[in-house]
Structures are given as C-alpha cells and as structure tokens.
Image (cartoon, rainbow, N blue to C red):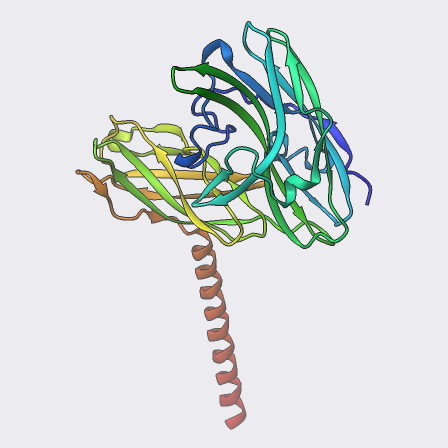
Length: 340
C-alpha cells in the first residue's frame, strides 16, 4: 500500500506552557519526565504534515492519527523549536504511551513498546541556536505480520540540564511531544463514535460550580474530547458562556468516562437552559436541556435533557396509531356492509 498523500498542515507549536490542551501529561509517578521548562527556556514541537484524506480532522493536525494496512511505510515531518535566548541541545526520540483512567498517559523515560519499534527518526539530536528551529523526519514501518488494533506512542523533544549538588547530580528534564495514534488492520478505517449520557451540575468544596457529562466511546478508535458549554434563560434571562471543557479526557474504544466544565463562581443557582457540544476529530455531538445548581457543595439533580428524537418517534407512533385506527374503522364498515 503506498504511503498516504501528505500536505503541510497548520498546527500550533506545542510550547511548554501550562494548561495547553496539546501538551502531554502523565501520572504523578512520571511528573519528573513531564516537568515543563519555564520562561525563556521553553522548547516546542509541532507536526508539519497530515494525510490528505484527514485535512478536515483537527486531531490529525496536532497528532499522528492514521489507519494503515500491515506492511505500510509512511513518514511525517516534525519541527522542533528553541524558544530560549541560549543554544539548546535537544534530544528527539519515541517512547511508549497508553490510555488509562480516561487519560493519554506516557511511560517514564525511553520505555519502548511495539509502536516505538516501528518508528525511526532521521535525527536523534539537534543543536538549535537561540530562537532557532529544525526539522525531524519520522518514518513508521508497519510489519506485514502486524496484528489488528490501535497502538499509542509519543515522539519527544527533550532538553536536560544538570545541577550538581554536594551529594549527587540532579538532572532536570524538560520535554514536549507529539502523540501517535496508529490503527493497523486490513480494509477501511474502523469508525470513531461516542455518546453523551447524564449531565450533572455540582458545586465543589469552594462552592465553585461546574457540570460533568458522562461519555461512552462507542467506536473502534480512541477519542480526545474537547468542547464547550453555553447557558441561557437563567434568572432574569441571564446568558453565560461559552465555557471550555476541561482538557485531557481521552477514552479508548469501549471505555466510559466523563468530561468536566468549570464555570464562573458568580453564577446563580438557576434554573438554566444549557447546550453542551463535544467533539473528537470529525465526530461532534450536542445535548441540551435544563438544570439547577445545588445550593451547597456536592452534586445536584441530573439535568433534564431535551429529546428531539423521542418527540419524533412519538409523533411517528401517533401517526401510526391513527393510521391503524382508520384501517380498523374501514374494515369494520366493510364487514358491516357485507353482513347486510
């Protein structure tokens, strides 16, 4: 199978800034590996290419997201940037990743996995001048014997500094990366899909309001959820939002989880009407309804969701029932005509 056609894609540099939705975060045990450089010492990495057939997929502009047949070889170009006023020696390498507890998690250090064994970089290190940048080519060669399924990895750009102490040397590691979601299997790409469930208003220990929404990954590929919430028809007709969904929820196929939307502390209890839109790649779903925040900390009553499909099915059912009644009436009239 030939390599996918590629086009340059516009993707924001993954600068090492807090709360960035495209930065990778890991479990507490891997916090040292995820430590972000501050201020002028930042480095960034971005994807320069995406498959031609995924130009409408926002995830494919940020991450390596693809489906290929066994035996396929393809490549992606990455750009690494030095955001500091000093020359930086940047190491570039691939390491293992996984999806656990509703998060895309990465293994410590340079832990390998099956996907990383398929990734070859044309450069393992870069010496970047102040505010300079350079490109790295990642070639992914999938063996013909590869089994069906989705694999995960990260291509990291890393800067290490050593600060000697009286007892030992301590290495401070700053790294940012590009996620890789590679699905392998014959035929076309498996579908991506999800379903939004119960929406619950709540107040935290500090009385700050938020909502959580249950989500099920009903497709066959991992999903990264983003989105926003808008509020309307509040007390005195107040409107609020849009509020962004807290970043970081990633669900593997078949997994269930939740997204959270932090809200303004000044919001009154309600009642409110809401509209919640969630997106992962090309898939977007919206739910709407109404809720009231609890007066004290804790969860409120689940939102009453609008159900337009239920209304449609109800109308169809009424029409069908009316049609059936009309047929019974006609048949009865005919039977009466025969009896006479």
